[in-house]
Length: 116
Image (cartoon, rainbow, N blue to C red; front, side):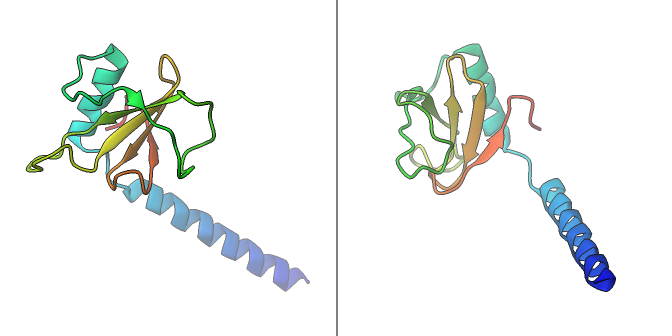
């Protein structure tokens, strides 16, 4: 029983260490995302007509919230002929949570205006 507990503890420590390394090696948000975050905190002006429109979270990839809670903003993609796939989705009025996606809403990661 003691060996089993020690083995489980070693596995747990290894998993936590691996998780921390992955979090530390995650690339920072791109410069354009930081600029978009700054625009959101300042209240604009926004370069795209759809910026600030309601994001409905249909796929439920973000925490559940009342309708109208989330708003989406374009993160420019250099070289893209259109708005591209990158967005910031902000929640709250004024925003208190921010999420970045670079794959057009398939996945998100939490960010904040202070991210580098």
